[in-house]
Length: 445
Image (tube, rainbow, N blue to C red; front, side, top):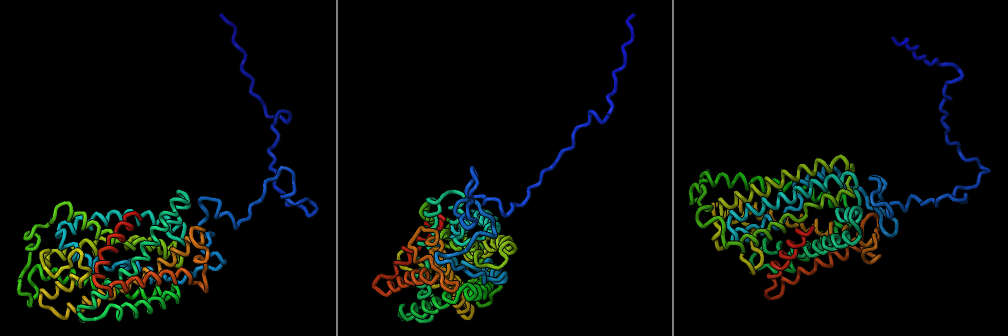
C-alpha cells in the first residue's frame, strides 16, 4: 500500500502576496508654463477642424458646411409641410402628362405599363438608398456629393456635371411643352408670347430663395395630386360605363385587345423605356433640397416612403388606366418628330364628351409643367453652385449672395432662353432631341 499523499495547501490571502491595486492615471490639464503642443518634440501637427471635411471621406452629419466660395450659407427655409407635398407631387411633369401619349402611340399600353413599372423599381431602390444617406448627411450638392465622399472625386465630377447639364436643358424643354399645351386653347399663339412671361416669373421666384420655391411647389404639387386622382376615378368610370355622355359605352379592356398591347417590337419597347426614363427624372431632387430643409433627419425618411406611393399610384396605375380609355392608334396622340401635343388626359375627356373636364385637365397640365420648370431652375442652379464651390467648375459660379446662388441662377435661366428655338421653322422637333438627352441622363443618374 502506498502512503496517503498530503493535501494540497490552500493559499491564503496574506498581506505579503496581495497584488498591488491598479492605479488609473488621469490626464491633467496643461499648465500655463508648459510649451504648446505643436512645439513639443515628436508631437503631430494639429489639423484645424475647418479642414476636416476636405480630408476625411466621411464627416459628421451636422458639421458639414453648406457654404460657397465666399463663406455664405444656403438657408434652411423649406418646411416639412412643403417637403411632404414635394415628395408627393414633385417632378411629375411633361413625361406623365404629355410624353405618355407619345409612348402609348409608339409602344402600346402593354409596353407603357411594363416600362414604367421597371422604371419605378429602379427609382424606388435608388430613393431608398438616397434617403438613408440624405438623412445622415444632409449636404449641399445632393447625391453626387456622396459620390465624391464615398467613391472619389472623378466619379463625383462626372455625376455632378451629368446632373447639371440634364437640368439646364430640361428648363427649355418644359417651356416648349407649355407652349404646346396652351395651344389647345389658342392654336395660333406665338411661342415667344408664352415663353417670355413664364421665364421671367420663374426667375423671380428662384431669386427669392428656397422659401418661395418650397411654397410654390407645395401648392402645385397638391394640384397635380388632385388632377391625377381625378383622372384615375374618371378612367375607371369610363371602363365600367358610368359616364353617360360617352358614346363608346363601357370600354372594358377594348383598347388592350385591339390594337395589340405591345406595338413595334423591340423598337417600341426601347422608345417607351426612353420616355419612362425621362418621366422619372427629378425624383432624386429630394436629396438635393434636403440641404435647405428644416429637420432633414425627421422629414427625409417620411418623404422617401411617400415617393413609393407616388411611383405606384401616380405613375403605374394612372398609365394603366390611360391605356383603357385611349386607343394607341388614335391619330390625335403625339407622334415621333412632330414635337409635343396636348395631354392624353385631355384627349380622354374629349373622347368621353366631357369638355369641362378636358379644360380642367389641360389647366392642371400647365400647372404641372410650370412646377417642373420651377424645379429645373432651382435644382440646376443649386447643383451648379455646389460643383463650382468644390472647385469642379468656375469659381465665380460657386458664390452665394443673401442665401441665393445668384451667378449659377443667371446661367440656369440663360439656358432657358433655348426655348425660343421653337419659334424657328421646324423648331418643335427640339422636343424629341431634349427628350432623348434627358432620358439618357436620368438613367445615368
